[in-house]
Length: 274
Ligand SMILES: Cn1ncc2ncnc(NCCc3cnc(NC(=O)Nc4cccc(C(F)(F)F)c4)s3)c21
Image (tube, rainbow, N blue to C red):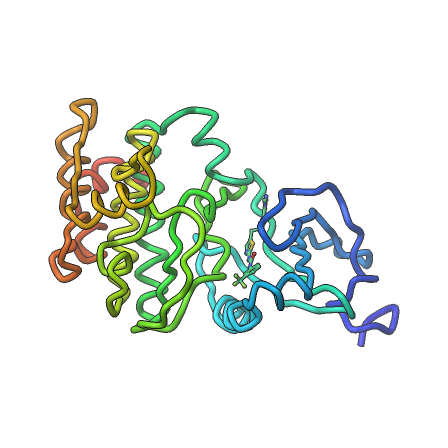
């Protein structure tokens, strides 16, 4: 029970603020609890008929079940959810600095110090996820947010699964982050996230994904399968070394997360402990 007699996680208990963004299946609003302490959250509103039409209700359920049990500073918290006749609401941690991809498109690319810190935070979050046998499977700038202290937060576990998984999904959205094994519809393991980490590192430093091919999907597929990688000379040798150790065709040849966190390019920019 609560002060006004309704369950705490219910719409009447929230004051809705400005829209924060809109995704495929619904909008996100800044919100706060009416009753003190005024807890600030991001409220994602999903429309049930769109979820049913998109045949993604299983994924939303899985996301809620997975994300509710995750506690890590670089993973956006899902505090809970509630629904009314037409909508499902996800009560999410509010990431005060907003969407990472917006900063990336505004700046064009990140300097290597900022990129290194983001990649270190990603590797930390991914090793936490993999220890819980969760593969995110959808690591890309659009799913990353930035917290109050400039820290990276992985959001949107809509495509995460318990490892290993070979469930075929109609993969929607960008192909740029898919590893060869997913492009070829093979069984995939948590090592798909290692490939995505390499793609992300390249995109942060260079400003665009490594296998993008404006000739279209099949050209991108081919470049991914052939690991047709060209790292510009503007990229430092240490950063290039990490990228090439993650973007390996064979999942078992990809640098494990523990070694990513010990890589010279990561240690070089680690926050100095005063
Ligand atoms: C923009 N913005 N600015 C600040 C800020 N702070 C927090 N959050 C923000 N935005 C919301 C980020 C999200 C986190 N988790 C999500 N989860 C989801 O959207 N799940 C989901 C939906 C529909 C269908 C499916 C599936 F699986 F069925 F496909 C899964 S969206 C913020």
